[in-house]
Image 1 (cartoon, rainbow, N blue to C red):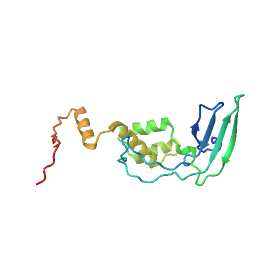
Image 2: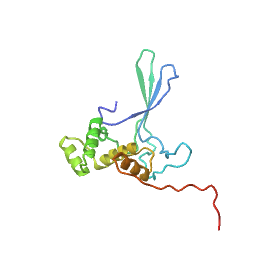
Image 3: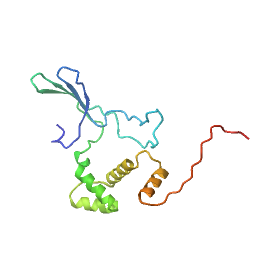
Image 4: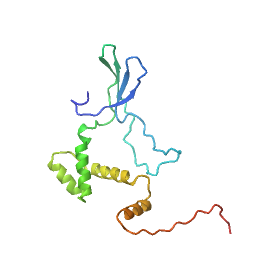
Amino acid sequence: MGKPHNIVIRLRTHHPNRRYGEQWLMCDRSVKYSNRTKLDGTSSDKPFIGSKKCYCPFKLKGVGQADGTWTLEVRNGFHNHAIRSKDTILDQETKKSILSMTASKISVFNILIELGNNNTNVTAKQVYNIRAREKSKLREDRSSSEQLLKLASERGYRVFHQTMPIKKKVHAS
């Protein structure tokens, strides 16, 4: 539906227990931003730098019929923000080429030039985000010092470090 107009609409809900199925199509920005929290309820390490969520009222309701067709009802057809183009979403091939160029130590500026020659609309922010996501995947849940020790031991360096035992009691003086 959004493809001919070059926009993105996401499937938000699906109720499999309904007889013929009901699906809501909403804008990416339709809900409120929810802060990321860990399983134990504590806040995330990452600072909050803003959100693109803006309570966009755009909603479509699709209901499956018994004969296999769908009826689409426009509940609210208006957006309260500029429409995001589908061209801004990078495909897997472009992401792989960015990661391979990053592994080859090519700078972001040169990556943008190379991808610009292939007629793709890639911004520096997208390249930095892809690189950061890959870095965090490799890092897993390790701290900076733990990651440094891991990489040093993988590459054959001799690693020496001291740990301080945790004291159970704190003595006041």
